[in-house]
Length: 328
Image (cartoon, rainbow, N blue to C red; front, side):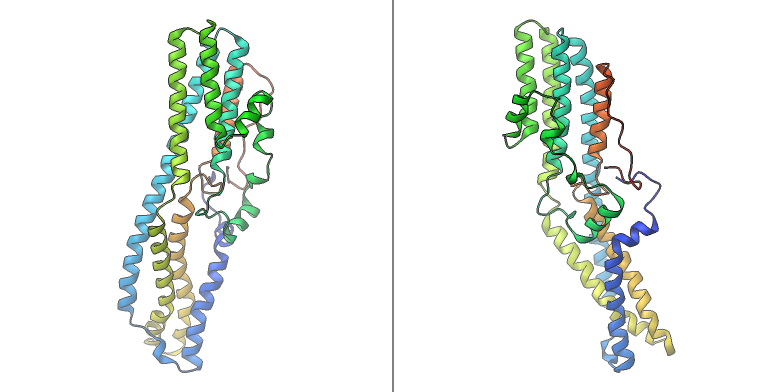
């Protein structure tokens, strides 16, 4: 997530420089052929280009609206996780009569938060962070979380070695950690360390956490429909390829050297439409770990700090800070 006032000009150029180079060539080649080779037949009337451009604007707007909804829903889900986590911490501390057990429940919850964020960062075939312009941006302006310590190391000390190994041996470690929470609550209730009413209340919070995890997994595992994404990209590319040929005819009417204005205006118009498509693409997958995603790592750290402070612990990790205004 960008945590500054806006993306800088340098960041935007770094992100789109390959497209700018391509649009320069796209505008220069037909202009040179028109001017030097006399290929005046290269021009296309502007009316069909404008019709295609109108269709492109509608479908790009539809995609951007839909992908923004995915991003905002993801942020709302993690907001609910924050609230439920704080409730879990305060109730586990106050309802469980065994101090060691309440600490164990809270630490295991922190382990669940880390397991969930690791699972949500796992790459999918349809995600875009592997694209060269996104990799370059991450390299220069953001943090690559995949270069950090593995989950097994992160949750060591939060759960027992046996619980850690058991959870990591399953396909969904986060689900197993919540199951261990439920099992632990049942055992505490059986030996009288927690009242029945309090057991029910804590169980309700576990159900809510399962629900929020499921919502995250739905967004993560179901992409923005590929038919819409494909048509959107194809239409934008078609329009961008048509632009210089329409520009040639328009600037040729002005006579003289105005024909060379085709190049900068091709770059400008094509870049605008490409950027609209790129923004929608960057918003499609809010958990993949790009600079425009929900900062689930920073949110997890915030929750961990809150829970450890509830326990009165002194060794508390510091809040994560943005790197070049990018918060992961």
